[in-house]
Length: 210
Image (cartoon, rainbow, N blue to C red; front, side, top):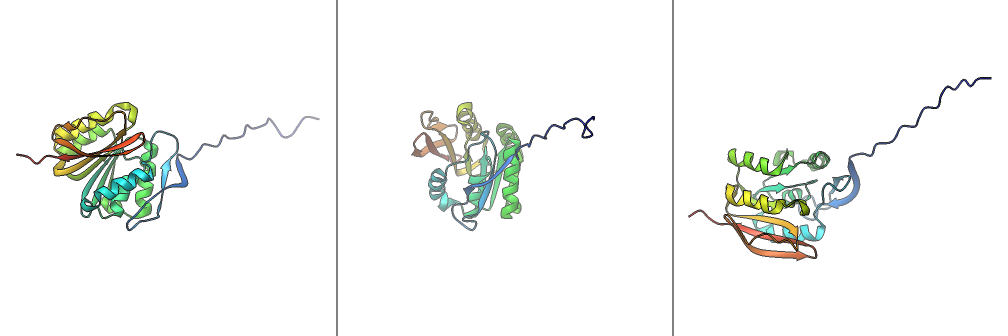
């Protein structure tokens, strides 16, 4: 007797959700202390480790209340959202990866900080030009680009010559320890480093205009 069930239907392949909701990233201190953040799946972004964020924020704390912060290569927003938690007035996030931007927007919504957070999806160097033309200026700029893409140097060159950091503003570059950027880049002068094994933070101050 012929089968009445018909041909077998292949099982649908389950597509992984682009956002990882495992609570691996959290706000360390401030008004949102302990709140969990989602991150994008895969290895296209690299969240800044808690140890590095703690050292970064402890150094920045006197400058954060009321500050305008620019978070470049922002990923899921761990650094910029930490800055908002600790009193920054506004953060502009720039990130190119679609999955990271989706996670970042979800984190902004979950924390209820949409009024103080602007998310820009696009190439960082192109977005820097747009921000400068729009008259944007920042007290603190943080950048954590992919270590193997040579973007630390090119981004610093853009910041050092473009006028986005305010006079006496700070620019902090996270980079591979063995590939330290120059101590002077345009108007930026390095004045401090913090090392964490293969990762180093280099702090720059923007010289005041003569």
